[in-house]
Image (tube, rainbow, N blue to C red; front, side, top):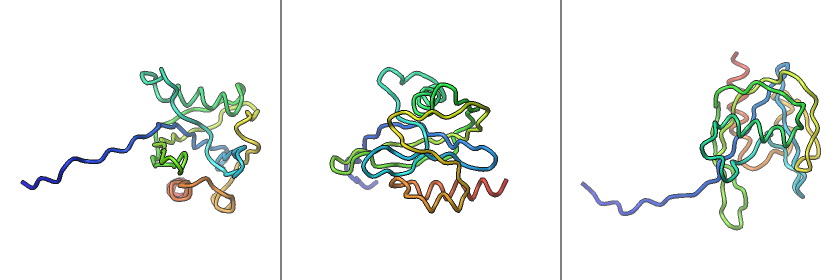
Length: 147
């Protein structure tokens, strides 16, 4: 048996995101940051939410970001990936994206986002996507188109 030494561990925030679909189109939101990248709605677990059902964390985040009237059915986790939070301090989020279907309500954006769009696959990649989003969204569209 070869001794390979201690393993290096990386720390992550955990983020829940919604692959919210309506009429075959995906909901993307534009960050209010200087960069203005497009991303999926959702966010990180808050302290004290560790024992909650992850779907409840996603529901809270969607209510905060899209307003209390937006309603969707939250399905199973569909994709996971790692997203840089802040490059300068090497912080990352482990992202878990759930397939969701909008079932009603209007969107009322919070201060975190300045715009939203329901996009198809072609429109998705014409936007300035947040770092690390392109590959998971390609995977989403390849799976979604196969349905």
